[in-house]
Amino acid sequence: MQPQVGLIMGSKSDWPTMEHAANMLEKLGVAYETQVVSAHRTPDLLFEYARGASGRGIQVIIAGAGGAAHLPGMIASQTALPVLGVPVQSKALNGLDSLLSIAQMPGGVAVGTLAIGNAGATNAGLLAAQILGLNNANIRDAVEQFRNDQTQAVLDNPDPRAE
Image (cartoon, rainbow, N blue to C red; front, side):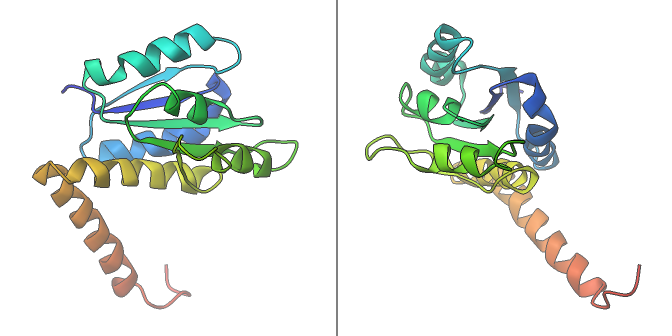
């Protein structure tokens, strides 16, 4: 399948977080590509990736970064594709630095910012699928089934003491 989502991160150490986005995309049947693209260490690669993504069939980019977290914003500055930013939890400020770096974009360069860490990565995968589902009934159906399954799991196990 042709990748529809670009799943990128600032360093290999971000993978344990970004893997949650990959897992959600796989669960929903969304094809993706994944790559380390550093805003600070490989800026030329960043520009090349962003400018070429649409031509490769990418429709949404999920960009995870920690610390200064410039990757999502820099990618967004180079493409008209929707960019979803995942703040990776950092050691120094527990991810607050990442969150603020991604969320505080200047007007005119949009990045959809998710929660810090694993939940944000999971939801980035889900949100990417929801965006793609606007024009793809199979993906939309998979998202709806996922949501129904979540609801049913709660209804089937209402007692918090039961396993």
